[in-house]
Length: 301
Image 1 (spheres, helix red, strand yellow):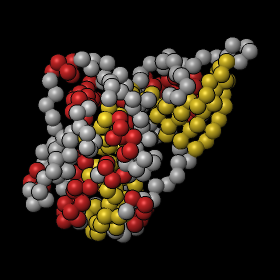
Image 2 (cartoon, one colour; image 1 turned 120 degrees about the vertical axis):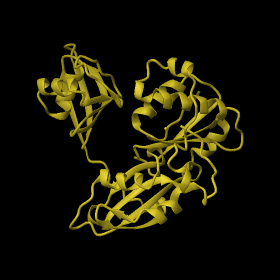
Image 3 (tube, rainbow, N blue to C red; image 1 turned 90 degrees about the vertical axis):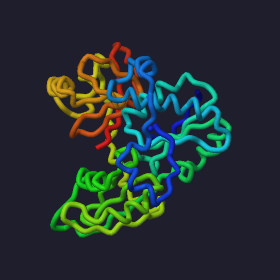
């Protein structure tokens, strides 16, 4: 498969009548039986992602036979997306485009279809992706709400996690939330409060999404090795021992996958995320005349 990702996950969207939708929300709308054999063949995928990646591969097979419209997954986490990218990279006749509502979205939907179809869709994936933006407006001055508060309120309406994308908290005024466009009416009817604060819910155009630009720091470092603890300590400005402790405590991921060995070697393009510290991308690695490594990094804070 020739896979194209514009930035940044599986079950086909169900076309349900709106009057029957609320009663179905307690079920996982993207549930598709994955055979035990198919899951076992993905032994290299972390256990928590294996069933979902298997579903994506099953969707790819069906997408290769679809000529008129792409097949669509739910919103996928970055770790599932990374494993899916690896799993489908060797397939043919199918192309993927991801979209989460805005360019830097982390949780995205994956559109899958034949290459000639996806070449057209990738120019403007917004409509085909069925991603909608909701504005939750309320006065949170005296009872501030966080990302988990908004997520909990949404899931409390009976919607599964896969139907919800990124949540952009807008300070004291509320939040903007990416959701499956088929659930707009449901949220307008059922989502009335977050914490103790009454909220008004309305769909807004994707052009009105207020995503803060990422804050980045560029830095250079010369290191004797490309070990995770060495480069991450330089990028996050921590001692190497502290970084090693964070790795061993399962607080560090490389390319969205958990890593517990500080000795893991990194390469150009790798992304390191550390709980509470943000993300670090290895932009460029060059070897110096003395045999060391000159590393260019970008930290997202």
